[in-house]
Amino acid sequence: MERIYNFSAGPAVLPKEVLQQASDEMMNWQGCGMSVMEMSHRGKEFMGIAAQAEADLRELMGIPANYKVLFLQGGASSQFSMIPMNLLRGKKSADYVNTGEWSKKAIQEARKFGAVNVVATSADANFSYAPAQDKWTLDANAAYVHYTPNETIGGVEFNWVPDTGSVPLVADMSSNILSRVMDVSKFGLIYAGAQKNIGPAGLTIVIVRDDLLGETLPGTPTMMDYKIHADNDSMYNTPPTYGIYVAGLVFKWLKRNGGLAKMEELNVAKAGLLYDCLDASSFYHCPTAKADRSRMNVPFTLKDPALDEAFLKEAKARGLVQLKGHRSVGGMRASIYNAMPMEGVKALVDLMKDFERAHG
Image (cartoon, rainbow, N blue to C red; front, side):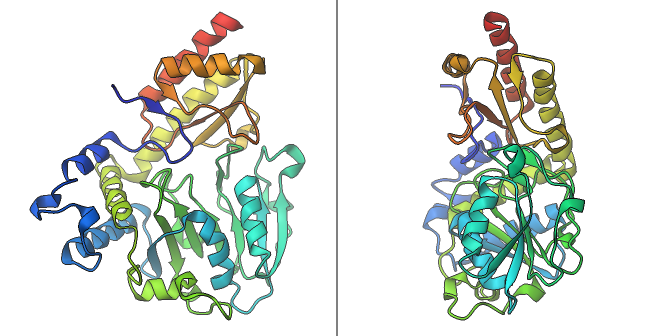
């Protein structure tokens, strides 16, 4: 069977070249006689894989020397706890921006460790926009400011980086990391689950500034202490070795294909093609404010919800899958991460136009 176009929000599509290389090296990595999955995480082969992956990620993102790169487990959801455990640092509260489901989960978890000041929210419009910063009620004494630059469910993306002054800015970049050029030095901490733009589920990347390490809440478990992982080069316990290996292949793929500047250019073009189709039609509707539309996750509804199943059936027949919207909002959602080729977006647009002609 030919490969389909997979619009899943995550685990998501990976570059074909990466999958092919991983397949070729599955049994025997570069002549060593074993799979990466069988390697000791402390052996020279895997230590080299991990070091190269970190070096390539640092190059791609321009990560300054005073930031640690951690390869962890537990997904972004574990970071909802680890962040307050590590970053409250003697302060009583932190600022959070609430722009959707993932923001809400981060807020709920942070409240177990300290006070949370919700400085801005878009709940008044069903999380369909990113609140302008002049509406935020920031606390100069907050331990940090947390926001979600891209909400996968609502399809809202911040196309600007908040200015939080001397208060560390924390970002959950799970769904838009590596999709655009970003100045890492504006952040105190960036975290991301791998399963959207980096690699297979199971790996979580944390990029954290040195001065934020080493002052955890009393009773913080060893495995939840960033400094422990930083001091041990992410090898305090057995890391997600195969996830790190595949992530390294993705980083190489990005470098070969022009880096983040080129990837951002392609993502703008892909998203533009799809949004142009939506905007030109009265049959489809995108609920997200135009200024805050995500380049990664595009939600839309059909004029008649009774046609949803027929649309999904026709999409599947054309090899376009995972287009059903999140259960909390319904409709459709096309996730068009880095590895989704332009051809996939064009195929979706062709389907949408054909379906509208047949049922409009």
